[in-house]
Length: 133
Length: 423
Image (tube, rainbow over all chains, first blue to last red; front, side, top):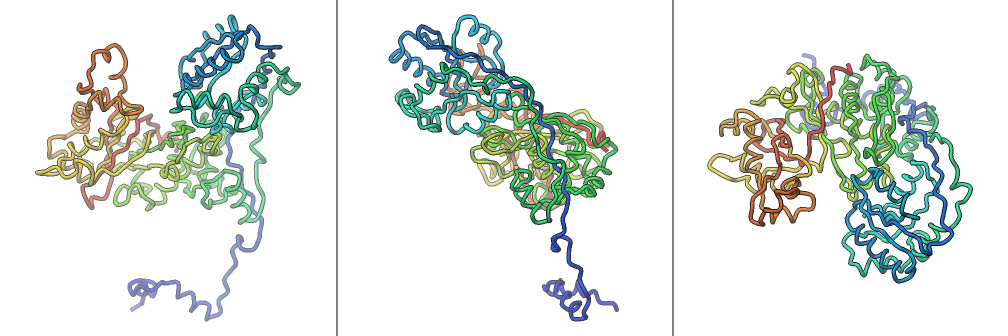
């Protein structure tokens, strides 16, 4: 009867790996893996393709804020409205000639609000937008 | 103005949208939950990034003349690095890991030979564009990716070529496994059809655990291609999950146990034929055990419908509910009279109610019931449904019948995609 030594060892709770000892004792050569020899491998880059970026020139700056209207825009994150209230209070105390206008941007956090942008272009001189928590 | 917790995100987002020199001032974090006095103190204090007084910095941002760099226009093509990396095996493992391309566990190095072998798992052209992935649609630029890109990530995950159609179908759902949100969201995929048996997917004992190469490598590939093909999962930049989610390593992969389920398979409920191979993806907070909790010992027989209600009530209703039942639970529910999944979900939708008072205590819940004109007449003791309709409650059957246990996921069904299309 042919004995399956691996199965027998497993049933006895011993690892069949001890059979490797007998192979070594018989002088069989084992081949080193390429990983162990320092051979070089070439792996492919797994990244997808990001879109090209169109650089946008920033809006010109104001010479001063005196007499100007600053729109204070919340993107809807909790707390932004109260924070912008405090900015309005700061301007009243420190730069009373500045007029502030609070607005909540419509839609989700990253949505455009073209009507608001048009209003700001028409009636505002600058924007401070509160983003995040 | 941005809180400091989002500094990297704000700077990189501005750059990716074409304003690498956007003038951003930072405040301490958080704003949410702070008193008016505390917020005013932020304004009187310093920008935590520059150390300079904050409001003078804001004024300077609005009034200092633009630099030449700030006025530049034109097109910039971001680089993702060279097409291949050549190094020793150990150094390549470190390179992929240190450059954010792995899940921080060793990968199968995606050599040309291995990727070509993987691509034999599909009849599709390797250069075929599958779509665009982004950590949050509308908030981050979407990256395009091809069949070859997914195949490279499938090799890295330890998948075999015959698993590739499942991975491609999940990719084609365009649902990344890593959302950018601070919420640390999770994703799940329910797989139906004869391919489960052909590939020996596990839907028995340990079905959602690390006990099967198909289940494990498909889930792992989802995270790897989300990171690499969609630029998801970059902490502080495209991943803001404040605590992370343990399921993101391999996601929740559910090969439905159609053989032992007394009900219609999930994909057939969605209008597909039983013999079609379909993957259905879900998104939400994750999954939790149902047994042993409130309602789990209601007698005389296990009242699993009542037990499910106890599990549903604490869930947020911004996501749906996915009940993941062992076949023994499904069989008990049939004995209670729920001979279809629809009867069960109808009952659950009608009976998963909470008071207006309780709904108001939940940060994101209440849904449509607490908004709109009808909400004006509601009193605190009034009961409102947790979910407005049954389409938000789904049921799948999986497990090895060692005990009548179940799990409940606070997750919404997103869409179903044909796996057969990608063979």
